[in-house]
Image (cartoon, rainbow, N blue to C red; front, side, top):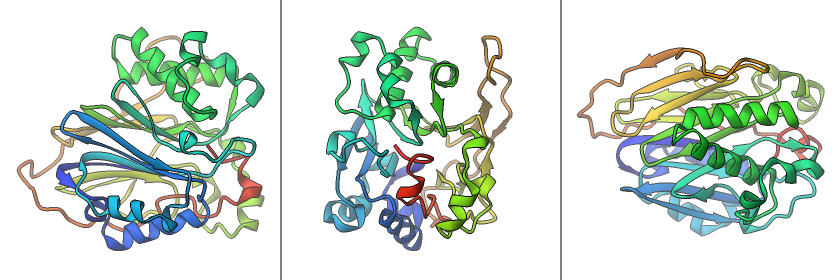
Length: 302
């Protein structure tokens, strides 16, 4: 899973660099249950997705090299056991011009129907826990008068209280900003299983997100082996990238059992060279968890 916000229309190949795009796409060997892209062309949101492996589909490569817009995301799916591999279950999902992709699993599946009201359940297009997570955010967006952070905070707290999630990591696109949520349960990272599958990164970083900034773009991506110049997004925090300015800020999500209301902003960063329009390839890092075989699907799937 990867999201970007650039100063001008750009392709994935431009914001990631050719090597970065190639390394990311190779992860579809492990995340081969579909792919999807979302982007904004002006104020118009677009979604393209497929149930096929990204590396095997010409449309994926063509879109990755097209300057689709200045704000977008790409997702490679590893399906939760029991959930069909179908186009409607591929990420991202869209509702009222807002789009979201999720990495993780929410259990138990037989209680997921209770996450949404009947009216919101009727909005479902597929069968995934991830789409229900997304629609819960959309329902809370109405409750909180369009405050995205409040809606995310509300949804994450509700799922944490009523269900069991290993990871609620997600990227949300709105016409004004990109929101990257890093939320996971450290006790549900399976170090022994990771080692058996050849994962060589620190186990405690398995579910982490990281981001990098240049004068031309900000990119945030799933965990792996980040370049030294990438910045870790703390667990249970949200990275916000302003589309107009590329300014970034990181806000904490309320801890379990905390009273209503969000904690103060952790940090705010101002982008440099606001007039720059030159795209610079970003440092390469393994932007998704590379192993994630079937034995790990219960820990990290969608």
